Each structure stands twice: as C-alpha cells, then as structure tokens.
Length: 339
Image 1 (cartoon, one colour):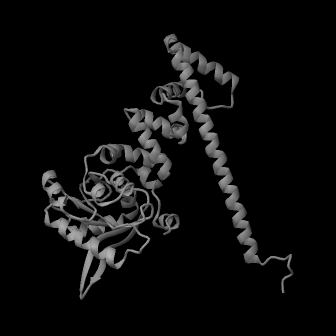
Image 2 (image 1 turned 90 degrees about the vertical axis):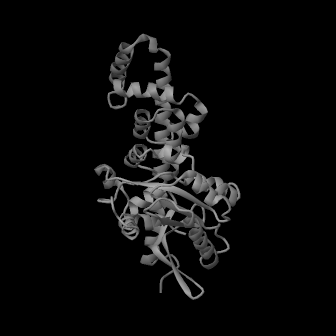
Image 3 (image 1 turned 135 degrees about the vertical axis):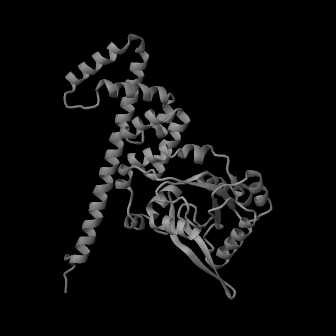
C-alpha cells in the first residue's frame, strides 16, 4: 500500500501534465504580450516617421541604418519594415482601436493586411476574425483571396434569421452566413450531381469546416431522421458549439426553387423535435444552391416560421499549396471541439 506522501505513476503523470499545461499557457501569455508590445512599438515608430515624412525617403534610410547600428541583434529595422510601420500608423489612426484589436495579431499578419486590404474597416474586420478564430497567416491569405469580407461582412443576404430568432442570436447567425460559399478545393467539380458533390465535400471535411467558419462540428452526411414510420435524410448536419444549435445544410446543384424552403422547414422541425435538447437553441437551416433569383428567394422565406437562409455556392480548383500544408487534420478538429 502507498504511503500518504507517495504518488502512483498515474497520479504523478497527471500532476506533470497539469504543470506542463500551466507552463505552456504562461509561455503563450508572455509571447502574446511580447507581440502586442512590439506591435505598439512599431505603431509608435510609424507615427514618428509619418510626422516627419516630408523629409523624404532619405530620412527612413538613415533611420534604418542608425537603428541597426544601435541595435545590431534586432531584425525589425530594415527600410522595408520601417515603411510598414508607417503604413500601420496610417491604417490604424485611433489608439483605442490599436489597443483593442489592432496590435493583437502577429506582425506578419499585420503586414499581410496592409498589402492585401484597402480600408481600415476591412483591416480591422480581418484582425478580429484572426483573433476569434486563431487563423494562421496562410489561412488569413486564403480568406482574403476568397473575398471573405465581401462574402460575409458586406453581402446582402437572403435570410429570415433576424425575424425568427431573438437578438443577439439572430444577428450572430446572420453574421456568420456567407454568400456565396466558395468550395475551391473540389477537383473536377463541374458536372457533379448532388450526392457526388456531398461526398466530395465530406472527403475534404477540414477544408469544408474552414469555409463554414469557427465553431462548426460535422455530425454527418445523409443524416437519418426517423419521423413516425418514415425515414428522411439530411444532406449535411452540423452542430455549432458557439451558437449551441444544430445547423442543417441542404445542397442543390440547381437554382433555388420555392419548394426547397418547405422541405428544409420540415427538417428543422424534425430535428427540433427529435434531436434538440432543452439547452440547445433552435435549429438553423441553410440552402446552398447553384444560383437564385433574389426576389423569389425572399418571397419563399416571407412566411416560413423556421430560421433559414439561402446562399449561392461557387466551385473552382484554386487553393494554395502553402494553405494545404497548414490545414488542420480531422484529429486536430476532434481534439479542438468538444460539446
């Protein structure tokens, strides 16, 4: 029998793991704090350069040379980087925004946003997405190149979420919907039938989840629902761990037809009755179609009393090799998502 001051091997390794987790979290906080302080420093330097920008390029060249002499071990004072600091100061003029979100991502990501976005609103929106979703630089580039800001933040969406859901849930669901969705990771997708397209999406599930966004957990394809004596099959079923609700996706390889909304409404009612728990929010529905007449889609949703949206999807074969190397595996997603 073990003495009171003795530990079993299992207990010891559990304690060791707890300590390692504390160390890891501490290192992360130190690293994040250091990144923020560096970015604030760069912003301040950028403001000084901006103030004396009338002195011309020679001023920045001399500044770079003298700073590198003074700080030989530092790598951030090249002419190119000093000019990025100036652009950062131009882009983020409000010091309050700087401290709230502007300095909380990597300097590499900030430089990417300076190069690839046009407005401070777009810059800050992508910054907030990086913070909330933990995007790597490769994922950030992909999202910018897929025009995510236009598809998600600026798109005029065809939904009834704000009418059928209470706030803030209705606004939160509205914010995460895109139009169109980009499935640019499916090879030879031109003439796929619905079941073939579903299968292709599921085979690329990590990339599909990246397109749907943070918080989506995949529950299944052709998910069976037994209602009475009949069995029905949902094209794609997800659970969103942030919104605490089931999320039904019906995929159509044709343009939207009004009867699609009725079928999806039935599925939402069935899942609310058969799967949803008391702690879950109402089930959300999304019709993904090859195209839609906006007025027809709006009329189709007008008297539907279930929360749903209608979006287009687009197919292409363009996804960078760099992004593919950095995409999470199915095991990574399973380990990251618990509900």
